[in-house]
Structures are given as C-alpha cells and as structure tokens.
Amino acid sequence: MSLPEGYTVRRLQESDFKRGVLDVLTALTTVGDLSELQFNNIVTKWDCLTLMNGKPIYNPVVIINDQDQVVATGMIFIEEKLIHTGGLVGHIEDIAVRNDQQGKKLGKFLIEELKTIGQKAGVYKIILDCDPKNEGFYEKCGFKNAGIEMQYRL
Amino acid sequence: MSLPEGYTVRRLQESDFKRGVLDVLTALTTVGDLSELQFNNIVTKWDCLTLMNGKPIYNPVVIINDQDQVVATGMIFIEEKLIHTGGLVGHIEDIAVRNDQQGKKLGKFLIEELKTIGQKAGVYKIILDCDPKNEGFYEKCGFKNAGIEMQYRL
Image 1 (tube, rainbow over the protein chains, first blue to last red):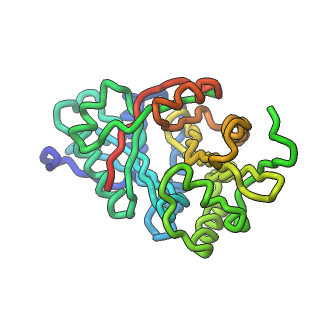
Image 2 (cartoon, helix red, strand yellow):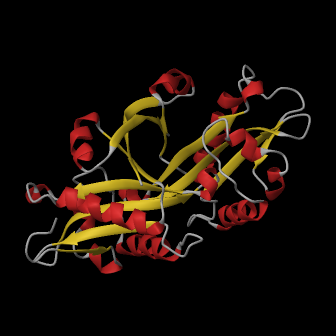
Image 3 (cartoon, one colour):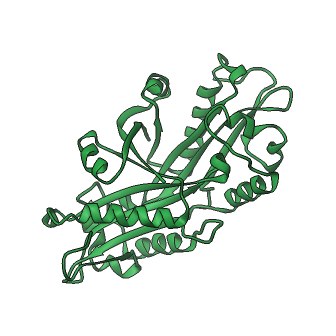
C-alpha cells in the first residue's frame, strides 16, 4: 500500500513539535501542557536508547502531509525479555490520525510501517491494546485477539 | 500482606540464574536454551537503562524461598510517553509462580510489589495483558478491564 501523493512517513524528530505532532495526539487522549524543551528531552532520550542488537528501543513514526504538517503518528517500542531465548516483543502504542484525515488509510499504513520496524528489529511478536470496537481494524492489519487488558490507575 | 516465613522479595540479580529463575518462567511459556552468559547480558542491560528521573526502566523482581531458590518472578517496565505531559506508564509482564508454590498468595504479593515500584517511579497507570480467566485475580489486585489485547506473530 502507499500514501496519498505528497505524503511521507519517517521517524519522529524534534522539529515535529512545530509541525503539530502534539495536536495530532490530542485526537487520542490528554496531552497536557508539554513545552518544546520537555518534548525535545523525551525525543532525545528515545533516540539514545538501543537494544543489544543496536536497533532503537523507541520507534516513534510520523506521517507528514503535502503542507509539511504531521497528520498521523504511532509508536513501536521494543522490550527485551528472558523468555523465548532472550526474545524481543514489540509494543504498539499511541496511534493517532488527525480527525480531518480519515478515509485515507493512514492508520493502516502506519501499522504496516510499525510492523516492518518490529520485524527488522527481530521481534517474535507485536502486541497492542485497544477498544473492542477497533478489533476489526486490527484484524485487517493481521492481528488476532489474544486476551484482555487490565489497568490500574494511580 | 506479607510473605511466608523465610521468603524474601528483591530485584533480580545475575546469580538468580543458579537459583532457578528460568525454571520458574517455564511455568509461563517457552524459555528456550538461554545460556548463563546471555542471561547475564540481559540482566546487565536491564540494570543500565534508566528513566529521565533516574529510576530504572526495567524492574525485574524475584521471590526467594527459605531454600535460597527463586519461586516466583515478575517484571514492571516503564515507558516514557509524550501524552499526559510526558507521562510514565508501567507495563507488568511475565508473572510466574513455581507450580509447587500455589496457595501462598505469592502472585498477589508480587503484583503489589510491582505496583509499589511503579508508583515510586511516578507512573500514572499500570497495564497488563492476560487471559480472560485471570480477570478475577487482577480485579482483586485493584485492576479493571480496559480493553482487548491484539497480537501479531512473526
């Protein structure tokens, strides 16, 4: 599959603060009042952390439109385990598509991109948690229902 | 709540390879043929990675019995996000209790220990994925059903 003309996909970078990545995330949940400095600190931290195989632990991805704005974002971070002979598991988190960009299959494209990143890093599985109403979407992306998410709020 | 007499809880260390931590994990899933060197590399890596607040990202915990053997283990690793003003989320993973140690509430104790670690690290929520049959156990630990887990196998 491919992006609409003029759209590109790449790793998140510090300058995406100005391209509105936090506005895109507000479609998903509370973002809060994150300053550009705090944003840059988090992105720098993400860029520094690597797996034993040298690949990044945090893989934040953005889709940029033909106006140089962020219109979608998603993350796969990779966990190193003892089980499965020191296996790697990819966790997909914080998928958001700007409300005015629906119908362009950006979400599906993003998931495929994150799956490819996970595969190249050497994960044996990728997991994500979602609302049951999104099960059909993730099934189309090749995922299967594997259980329930339990949550404890502080 | 407290552990049975002679039992202790602490962070996993390299010498727990000899105390049988991998045997305990086989109660949960495939462990594979992980050498002591590979084990030490993973544990060292886990010990090196810290959050921006200085707390560890990976928090592997073991319960040791009065025979100096590992009888239960669990992990909380902590993810740094952009959302929730750069919020932290704890992920509980790979909870295992040795089959001959059932009925001592070691699982419940372990979850409480991991919740405390998450709280001290400053997480705003803790999540875990499980089989629906374990929902009642995690409800007793203060968790609520928050959605479904989707999985993609490579």
